Every structure is written in structure tokens, then in C-alpha cells.
Length: 258
Image 1: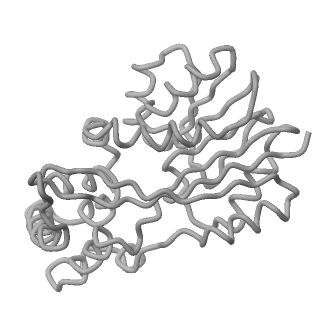
Image 2: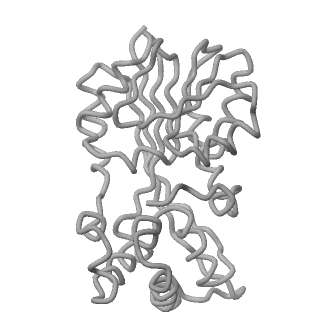
């Protein structure tokens, strides 16, 4: 799969940053010394962390060279690590591991989440936000188009089947078993979008990537056209001519005992 496109991702920067800010607002920490932005992307979430904790040492971690380049351009003074979340481990126990819209790309959460929590310093916080839109029309339609005969041979079967994150209760139990003070909740954002094409552009920067990127270039346009037609039918035009993109997100804040 091709590397991430920071410019495409940041086309909806305000909408993507809102849940990051709302996650951070629920982090109960005063003056953490070591903070990790896990899956930092282009740096919009890191900016929030740097504003909230100006004295902290902040490490940005991402497996995308393009995203890290963009993040370094925004905050060149902060450290970074080019690494995969699946096997990343901190050199020093962080006071905060903050993962905004990143862990949904990583499997085996039954092992990953307890491992990240165990890596915290005493009194540390694990803060996670993940899209929970696997069953939304936006994502069901991706899988529907991917099953069409002209596209299916080019798309990995696991990608076509999709991967849902765990149930919210499972995350609570995983962390409660570790003795965490756990706060979990869902928020469903309703993003007004100009038209069906805007919805496709939003998802082209994230969820559509595993479907579109493996296709030969001529088929990429065909896939996006077929997908956009279905999106136009699934998302009704509202009174102002826009369409509301429902976007559920799952939030987890778990605090370790001092």
C-alpha cells in the first residue's frame, strides 16, 4: 500500500482534530514529564499535546515517512520515531500514551491494549480514540464495491472482509483486569459535507486506502466512481443541500494506579 498523503488527510483537519481535542480534555494529568503521541500522523494531535503540556518531552511515533515529515515541519523541536505500533515499546515509561485515530489500523488488540497500558509509568494514562464505523454505510459500501468482479482479484481478502475493532465492553474489561481506572464512551459526530464527492474525499485519505491503493491506476478511478454513486444514494441531501456523514468514534481513557 502506498504511503499516506498528509495533504489529503489534512483537507478535513478541523473535523479530524475535534475528537483529538475531546480525548485530551478527559486526560487527568498535571505536568507529565514524558508523553508519547502514538500514531501521530501529520502532527495535528501533537500540537494539542504540546499546547497542553509545554514542559513535557513529547515523542511522536508513526510508521509513515510522509506523515512524520509533515509532523516535523510543524514542530521541528520534538523527537520522533519511525516505528510500527504493533511492536513499538518505549525506552522509558511514559506518563501518557496518547493514540488518536491510530490503533484501529493495528490488529490483536487483546494483546496490544494491555501491553501499552503496562508500559506506562505509575499514575500514567493511556488515552485512545478510534473510529467505530465498520457498520456505517460509508464502510459497508467499500466492501460492497470491493466484491465486484473487476476489483475483487486485486484486493486482499482480509481487507475485503474488513476488520472491526473490539466491543467497548471488551476494552473496559481488558483494562479493568489490569487494575486501571477506566473511562469508555462513544460519540457519533455528524459532519456536514458539501456533497457525495466530499464524503469520498474524506474517506480517500483514510478508510478507502486499503481498497483503492492496490488497484491498477485505471481501476482506481472506476472504484471511486462506483463508490461515489452508492454514497450519493446512501446519504440523503439535507435542507441546506449538504449531506450528514455520521462518524461514530470510541474513546478510552485508562489511568494506572500511582
